[in-house]
Length: 302
Image 1 (tube, rainbow, N blue to C red):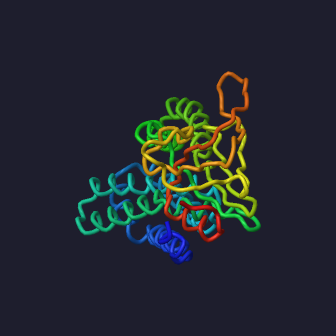
Image 2 (image 1 turned 135 degrees about the vertical axis):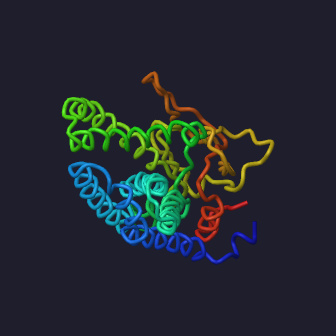
Image 3 (image 1 turned 45 degrees about the vertical axis):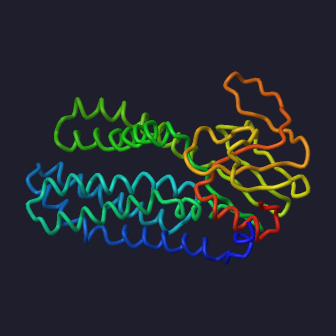
C-alpha cells in the first residue's frame, strides 16, 4: 500500500471539484440546450397546461441550480432527483420535437446532468459539505436492491407524484387532478425522505480515528479509535470480518481492530444488543479516495 500513501491527496479533491463544476455547467445551460426542444414539444398542448409546465420547469431549474451551488447532503438528494429528471425530460423532448439538432443537443445535456449528479465524486463533495473541523466524509454505496429497483421506483414516485396532479389540474381535469394531487404529493414526500436517508450513510475520518455512520447496518454510529485500528484496506477474499456493506456492489473496505470492538447492529425488532467484532466491512463509493485520505492521516493502511 505504499503507492497509496505516496499519492497526492489533492487528486481526489480535484475530481470532486471537476465533477461538481461539470454538473453546475450542465444545469446552468439547460434552458439553452434543453429548453428549445421542451418548448417545441409543449407547443401543441393546451394553454393552461403549457403555461403551468413552463413555470414549473423554470422553478425546478432554479431550485436545481441553487442545489448545485450549495454542496450539502440535502442538496445531494435534490440534484440526484433533478439530474435523472432532466434526462427523462430530454428523452421525452427528443421524441416530441421535430428539430433533430435540438433533440440531440437537449438529450446530450440531460444525460450529462444525470451522469454527473449520480457520480461518486459529486456524492463525496456534497456529503463532505456538512463536515466540520478536521474531518472528511465519504459516501457509502447504496445496497444492490436499492440501486437496481427500489431507488428507481422511489424516484419515479417522486416525479409522478409531484407532477401528475398539478398538470392534470392545469389541463382542466379537476376531479382526477385533485385526487392525483391528494394521493401523489404525500407519496412523493415519503419517497424523498427515504432517498434522503440513503444519502446520509458515510464513513468519516476524524482525528480520533474512523467512524462508520450507516443507519441501515448500525443502530448508532461507531468510532474505532486510531489506537484501536490494526489496519484498513481492501477486503481480503478469505476475510472473516462482519459484513456491514448491506450487499452493496463494488470494492469493500475491511477495517481490522487491535482487539474486540463493540458495535450495535441495526435491528427491525426494536431490541439491539452490542456485539464484539475483530473486523468489519463497508463499501464506500470511492474506496481509493478513502484510503488515500486515511494514509494522509497516518492511519494504518494496508
